[in-house]
Image (cartoon, rainbow, N blue to C red; front, side, top):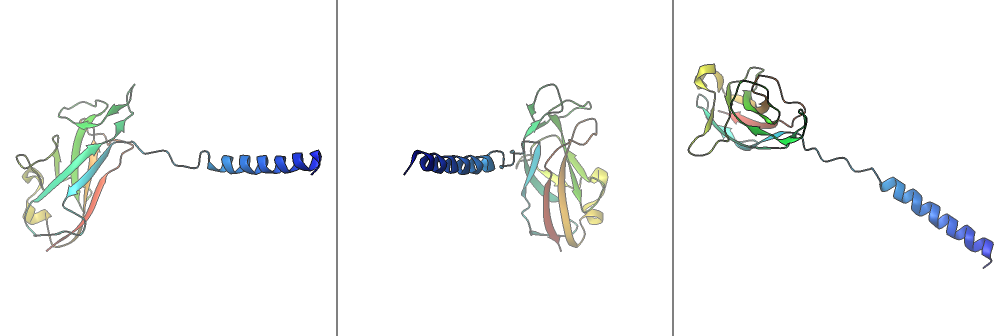
Length: 157
């Protein structure tokens, strides 16, 4: 093997490796850390009784970058927009929210929808396929953006 052939072979190997390396750099999507609400109960496809309130459980996660510094999002009461703080609103196959909360639900303090101040369960939890959606809002009523909302399809009978 001559020096020219060896250099040519080495150059081909280097260019191929560099091209492969460039193809791998920057290909992965950045992780979405925006505020998120995740519905844990009810589960997708669950069958629920018509005319009765729905016990909804969820978790909150993610980082709010709407202020001067990124902060973890949490649900906290108030009436002003504070970065990283807000409430959860529930929608049931409608554009109007039917309940809201500023606390993580648990056995001692469940999040039941609909809240009677927005309508009765007999009126709002009717038979059929329903989309239960939870969205994050700041306490001044502005929608948190970006966010990852919680969505579960359920059946009401």
